[in-house]
Length: 364
Ligand SMILES: [Zn+2]
Image (cartoon, rainbow, N blue to C red; front, side, top):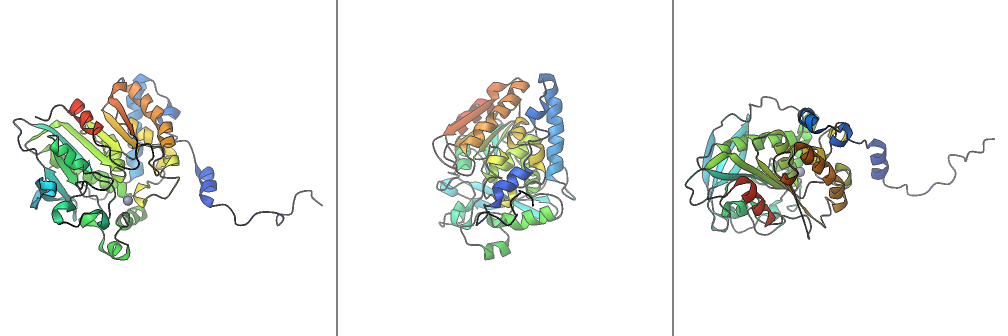
């Protein structure tokens, strides 16, 4: 007789949740990550080029996508005035048959081309949109909610803004998903697009990055905009797209990423997150801070609430040394700024405007 316990002996009931065991089983340190590859100052640009190629590959291809830097037609469809601020509502075909909705805000007076910001809101649901008329339906414009009107803040500070409505949200929420989900479900609209993309070997993130890059071209072509002084800002799911877009498109001169920078293992993979976060195979190659290091030497403001429950502080503690290493290797450690504020998963107004003024120059 063997001394080994019978497989049916002992045990516990119920078994523990699988997530932790599966994570331990599947987790790998990012193979193409900055610390693993450990380039010196001279090798940093080559690491960035290779990591960008890996990121593009993992995001996945988009069939029939034109070069997002090519000019596109902009259709004006009206004006909305959230909080008394006029915004031109426009429709732009970003992919064949795919029409994005965006709002352009222009400062009242501008004598010469000035700074601009591409504004990418995070998840919002029909319940998050104030009921007092279509004017307030501009995502990211409302004073209430976790986004705290950050797009309007940039406009009031004198920047031209282009605020896009993320694919799957707002006017672009899938009707079947909208009918099936409660009105406070902010992620229901992402699922149909994310599922289609994943099934065909690409990602919703790739589609959103492509749209952001097309709208960046629109923004850069506006008469009041200096194309050398364009920033991008986003929170939460909008922070995801901001980080990915700025990593791949060097036309973005400075970026503000709020409520997102962390490690995959501590945030997106540690608790329920929307399907739009998932890019097959990416976590095995690059972590969020590696992607952030692709922005160096361009200025980056990382904004995070100390009590953010879905992008926890401990994950940011672990991510920041990697990003700092990237900025040191680029020779511009001063271009990485970190705003850790008392609060949760929300925009923190104030440091964002100071950052833009410092790095994109005066608005007037
Ligand atoms: Zn989503």
